[in-house]
Image: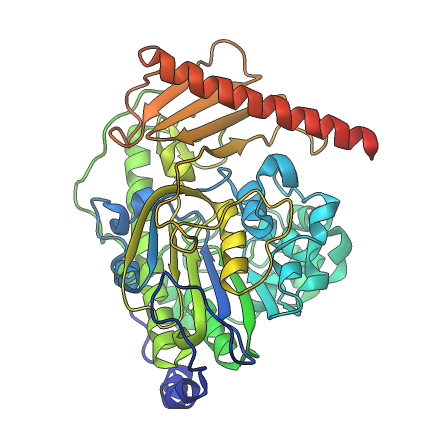
Length: 515
């Protein structure tokens, strides 16, 4: 059952002409150019982050299934980054890197429900735009909400998670904003089970006592026969409502604005709308891969079934992204808005592992999408240089005419600097949730991408877990470990990587001793 044109969408169509006439006339004519501010209003910035969206599962990047036709269409008016990497394999480290422009070893949000170091409360995406833009933010994701609550003094309008919740309001966010991580985990413990009953909502004892659950439209149960989407323990939502809400926000936000919207789908549980269920029941299988020393025990059949559900969920999310972008175009919002579409990390369906809360850094986990469309852009620009999520912040700052502060580890993305393709540099990703926030990095997985190769180093796990080297250009499925056969390349990359760890640990020891 597909949603019909809503009343608000009809209003957007009517208002499009008025918005277009109000748009500044000094818009970019070429995507490579920088916005030159000659009016009182600079470009708006809209960041759309869809959680757990792996580039390896997008038809935009050559995936076998047609999962992203609407994003593919949007790419025709955008910069498309084909080798873009998250800085971690789960929300906390990678989202913090996107919002601060530094790697996890610097911002130190290493753990589940981790927080950034004190200095970044005043040095982040929102603080840098506090003077030039109206800033607003929302997320479905409680881990991302931790950072937004840390940065709340620099966000003009921060919406709580239950703004788009059907039930299971997050009371910790309103009652204990200064101690949100602890309060949130205490709250979801009180909620009980996080397993949904298909086609219905759970009302836990905690929620009944608070009497805050919204009624659910009966047609939602028909639209979502496998269960209404939820994040954690009773925190339910519907993506269509989130998209409608974003459209409402964009049509009324003050100019110029910086808006950050981080939505949960296509994160597990994979519960697409009815019209997408079994869309990819096509008999496709992917190559079997060897089990890993840190592997799980999920069977190949279950991995296959879950991959199909994930792909169907991506196709559903893509349809809603298309609806959002089409209405933004009709309303004239794209005329003066830099639109950024990305993710925080991917998902894994191989080597006995399902999901992303493991200790590996394979491509499905850290290769994420990045598309950037600038005001009035009408052509596509494909970029194949390796880039990182830490590059997004300095790029936005430069494009909007803001100064890039000292200490940012990211670089301005190719296409927005003087070179279309920047000289290849080493890109890093790490998993270190077993480390403490303070002190040296002792147990971690670290990946380094350089030229066409990727080195994966396991530190603190014992000698039984060996290093891995892949030619990710010619072997994107990471089937052939070249560590023992490409010795010169492996040794060169390992030397650089171990020096980086030593430098990071040395700086952390100095910082810790001075605090």
